[in-house]
Image (cartoon, rainbow, N blue to C red; front, side, top):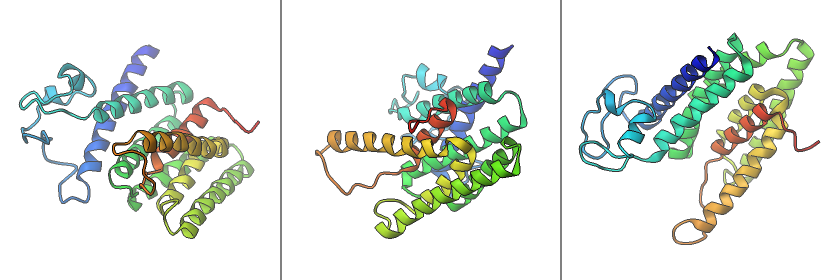
Length: 248
């Protein structure tokens, strides 16, 4: 029975990852993100059901359009696999509870934010508000005392202030303004894992940033704008699911 639920949550996560990708590509472009058929970006052929099965469609077609054979970026399938896996891990960690579904809702919004930040290096304020709402509800459901809840909010507020100061004093060069509310929400979401999550975020960002500078086309070049929200998402979730605190 548990394996059956794992399959359901993986499929749900993969479907929602695909939907988050559609929203991140269409929103603020004049296109409708809740209606209209999906099309191939190269030949504009309307995609049918066989083209829209999460992960499997990309694998079966070897990552190419069935009509024009244009390459379909692997990031689509990778996002579906990652969110599907996160949904399964969340189910195994939280069980079939109200907390689980609130947490999954937060993961869905976070996925959209990550995809949009990668694409546009900006965080839409509407999505930040949604992430805060789900994270705050999850924090309320997690904590069994007012004192613990207050501690979570104080720590989250302190982390957000640090991010805002980095933005303010660097004039946006070291950190974006939208990173502060995301850090605040993620700190609420992971609770006691917030501080380790910050450390993991900067470590992951530092490693990937160095690799990007070294191996990018044209050679190393400073001053390239790199979105930080994907690193925050990875760092905070790593800290939450492993409960690993590198400080102790």
